[in-house]
Picture 1 (tube, rainbow, N blue to C red):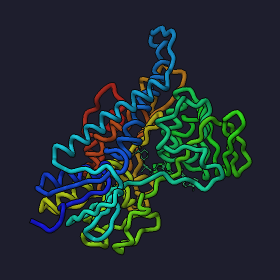
Picture 2: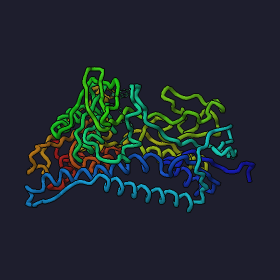
Picture 3: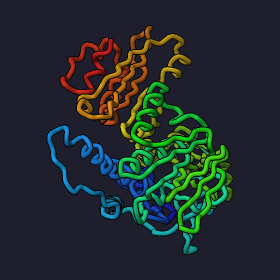
Picture 4: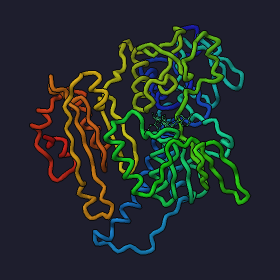
Length: 448
Ligand code: NDP
């Protein structure tokens, strides 16, 4: 018996919070979770899941385009945004129910209201009720950063993009990171005229340059316009209801929707952290140690709110490790090396391990193996898009330090090859593996 209402109170029922709740409960803890919006968090409700469904929907545009050369006669095809939007929303509802039933079946109590920290062992609900807990876990995630531009109220973020009443004819997207380029691909394929405007001349900062240098012209060839070194200055509403975007570089762009995707910031504002002496980092993040513990010993944090790696599977791992450590008597930490990642552009890119530049910084000399090929599925296409795979190898040990891929299904292939890179396999071991023919993935074992 403890003097607290709960052993664990989790603030935020997203990927990290739900995993931590159910694992802690399975270890015998009495757990409650508060969520101010919808159970499932960013990934399920307004991120990875609905985005990926839109990406799938937009792939049909490419398949339909290529279908006649494969012998199909197509008549009367048309796209219905409202139907897709409502189908996606229905699937999000289904997943929210699944997450809620996971909490129920693990006897995790849930409160559908905002909760803030009111003391080292106390949270306060929006209703004013105070609840005590031996341990508090903060898993409130991150929120889109709104750039400082006049008329930003006319813009949407990835939070609103899934509810658009109709498919915008002209879309301007600010930013050239994950969200900007994924939605550029979706809207372009679905038939919108897309312009990406970015403050710098870089896309997807952090990815290997060989991938981004090849992705950019492919996206341009598909019809997406890019305006680099053009931060947006203001967005104004016109009398006909459309929007006018003016950039600092003097460009005027007419649009029906302006999507801003300029990063996400930990959602710590007003969370009461100052009441327990937790000082935030420069991006508003909660600093934690290797065991996800904050400077207040009874309070922990996992996921995007800690601003370590803003990826769902990482938040899930952190939540799980937290619960095992604090309630399962099995302390463990999360390894942040070799985290695979992908951008669901069209075509997608995927990466694991060190980029060439990072590997040179760490190892000095590195070997690089490249395969620049035309995927078989593109053979009949009038868009002669090429795939590109790259292996970065440490010549001293022959270990594969990084794999970087651009091309159809790259994320699916990369997840498997990430196991080999994480396991420290050598280039010779890649080469010993017999190719699976005909496939794109066989390029990985054929680079000489
Ligand atoms: P990113 O950090 O990926 O990209 C931000 C973009 O906005 C960059 O192009 C950056 O330009 C630009 N930018 C940043 N600040 C400003 C500013 N003040 N004014 C103008 N432009 C600015 O952020 P996203 O919002 O696209 O995504 C947020 C995070 O969500 C990602 O980092 C990722 O972790 C996660 N995510 C992951 C996905 C996946 O795994 N597939 C999909 C979607 C999101 P510059 O390059 O010049 O700095």
